[in-house]
Length: 381
Image 1 (tube, helix red, strand yellow):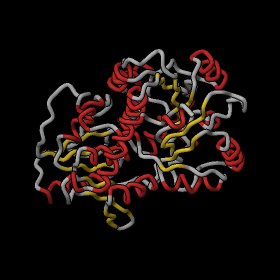
Image 2 (cartoon, one colour; image 1 turned 90 degrees about the horizontal axis):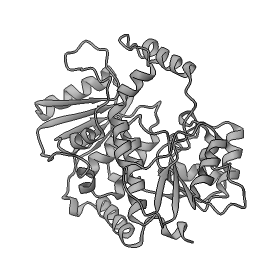
Image 3 (cartoon, helix red, strand yellow; image 1 turned 120 degrees about the vertical axis):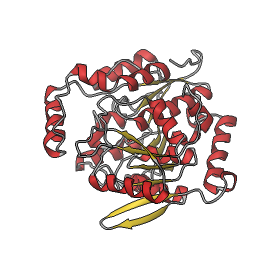
Image 4 (cartoon, helix red, strand yellow; image 1 turned 180 degrees about the horizontal axis):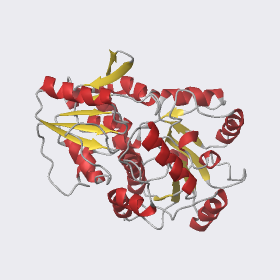
């Protein structure tokens, strides 16, 4: 577990529950890394939904009968621990996190116990209702108006072009955001949504972009050497994506395909292997950094491909949300390719990193964080 300065301000972080995917873990690690460097004492508040047999049954039904994964066993607690063991190991070694918190009342108690001076909501899809264990908590509605705890959001995301909110949710959000000391969102669509709530939001960079590539490589226990491999990271594999991968491998004459899959695949192909146990986070970093080309359907796979200057193609999933990728088009100067009913997002480094204007802007912001500290204007005002 990383060390922090016990004499500094204690800052709580509310993000989506950790341990289920690589991007979620790395954005939280990056945010904590920036806060620790700036002299704060961060802790991620592990706000999670109560364990539910009903929820596990619904998940099992969806994957087995909707996604047609007939090899999927029922996810017992033991299987769950086995599947995510390497991700949980990463959390234990690298992220400061509270015990699991199952209710708003317990969250309030934990915040009082920790004597937090501020709470940061973000980054990632913290304001996406369907992903949230309790949407109201992520708008900090439990804090009384007279609290001295600073309310801050950094690179928070609604996940969709229009939030999946009810009318009551929207009323709640508009009232809650007015009380924030700072509202920062990750996508331009989030700025527009906040404006409908009467709030002027700041457009933030994902925190993973503010950490130098060498600091990610330092997490890996082996030397990273560039090879001739096609790195494939898919959250939701389909036959279309499978054929796209094979097509690019042939076109680019890349002999090796590194299948890095979030889900087990039930297709008739010797290329697939059982991914019931997710690989270590360090392998995700090393796989992208050492690859020749990346194909993925993940937002943070695109981010890390850019960080390591690897050309990539993103095949977004409309159900998971496309606006996140559209926000990267202008940021990274990506190309958009129409492929029938689908759109692919493509980026290839056409200039040296030192001449890349986007990379220069990120480097400048990163330098400011190093010099002035992260969010100091809001945490110490």
